[in-house]
Length: 449
Ligand code: PLP
Image (cartoon, rainbow, N blue to C red; front, side, top):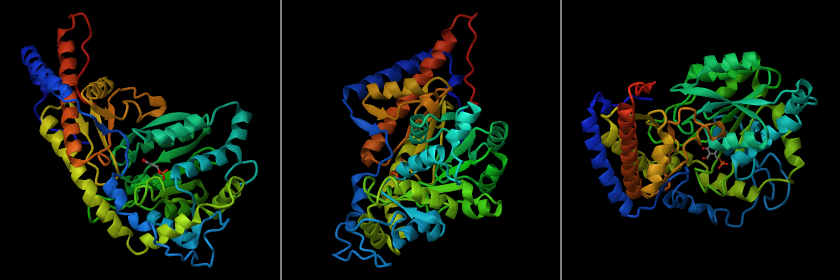
């Protein structure tokens, strides 16, 4: 993250701040009266992005045969059809043999992998985490880099897994912290990773971090798993796109191939509600997963898999560039407005992702909830403060996730103007409260960490 600007709002006198608050409050009241209804909450593609994939409809033209002769209309084929597995391999940068092509949601696959590891064991008989948990009388724990993805945390909560927050850096999770944690506690069984355009910071794990994560299972307790959620593998805003170091060869070289499961989907490539999801792993893990999934279903939606494989064959990159053309102006609108409104005030910092779906914004400690509440009052809905942290608790109350893709460009601009105003107003309120506090009361620091 970057610290913006040089002059600080905190340099102003109490009289300056009071005047400023009056001006901001007047503008806030104006915006409130305008009755805005704007939404920057969930990272969803907008209708124009979805329309890029309308060609899926009818692409099969009555030809339902996969390359291996499978009639995709019928039951069967837990691992998916070959051309869909090839598509998953292209997205994940791995081999088709290592990929399962499944239903429409990679989150479902993540849930299934975690549940299989808990209850059934991914590494053979008697490897279930739950058995070890019962034997030791201690809960299973996961490492959760923060800020992170709320739905990863929801999977942990649903399955009774305790979450351990890990600080994020610009290069990925703080690996000194991570290595210490897994070395100290054998009940830490997994780490969530969104290695490219991380949700929400947008950072890309650097090579050294990927290499350390690939070796991590060797330092951890038994049956450790790296959950490599590469949801934004091909979701670049710039060309040439930055490259993510491939984890699979590094894990294999470290003898840890069984301990990394990768995920991706076409949710933000084609239709968010009707895409194809992928998991990639070692032969041992895929065989266990196939058995587990086989108890749940006779086979995935192979018609959709074939549609996707035919539609995207040879044109994935061009298709993603078309997405970038639609999304990039929205990211630029947010970043330009934040810079123009807040760039010189030194009251906040934010990330400038080169891809993915989110911008992570950090207020002064203790202000995120207040900013989200002010924005709601002025007609702009934001992801609830705290959603980026396990159990919805951001100890600093500072992180806000901004999702610019779904709203129309003019709404993104308007919403960011309101948002920036709310940040400034909340920050001024805080400074005034601190300066007005009785001398005996300790004065909270406004310095950035
Ligand atoms: N993983 C991450 C990091 C995401 O940000 C999202 C959606 O926002 C998903 C997974 C959802 O994936 P899917 O639609 O394949 O379930």
